[in-house]
Length: 66
Image (cartoon, rainbow, N blue to C red):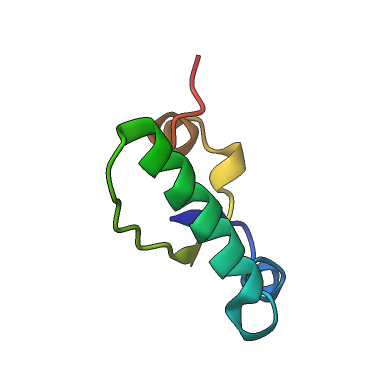
């Protein structure tokens, strides 16, 4: 999941015809395949959650904690 603050950010991340999202997903999948030395099926989603970057609990759940 790619978390966004605002709905208006979705077109930026997804790109025209989904091209940018495909590039992001492909890069992530290829990196995981190299790491695990096997094929990986990766589903990628863009979700909007207002204020997540200011929420300490959300940051921890998303792996941004110390």
